[in-house]
Image (cartoon, rainbow over all chains, first blue to last red):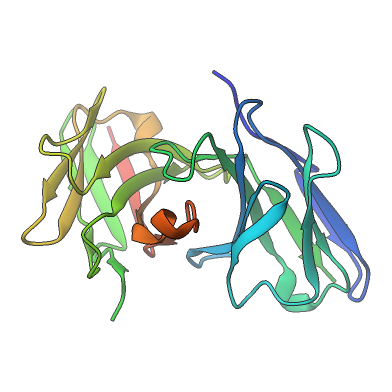
Length: 114
Length: 119
């Protein structure tokens, strides 16, 4: 079965550094998402992306965050200047359409900010 | 008010028994979708089952079924014939009607239920 691929699986960075989390969505999918889960807490929506622009973003997704689809296969989340509270598991997801019945998540990137 | 409420932080079930994980939701939208995901200790989020608000039949996917009671706003997950590999955190999530206005799959998640299957 096709799957969403995320790299790296773990990322450790120093506070204030920039990080880029990478995702390869399922090939025929058009809608892409980032979610995050702080340890022991709920999964939270960050941003949705379609047709090379952001469709919706949450309050968490401030100016320190950006997303990009640099080519036909990758979808990236950049955190410009990481803070301790950015430590979390970041999940990429994709669907074929806006109301996809199956929202497939990648296996996540565990980001640790020291 | 919480949009998704999972009242069972932890559940135990004997292998081969059925178990029901509770989920209630709160929305004023007529069109919405309900999802269940499984998160093993390795951390990935595995899609289990989906129920649309207009679906008249309860969704089923193999050993998973969703007991959808619209008037009560509940969407409980039933796992039949539990297996040791079912031990994991289970999340209920809802997509509200904003996808109609281009919002797409913005899901609101519950706090999860940790299920432990015992021999």
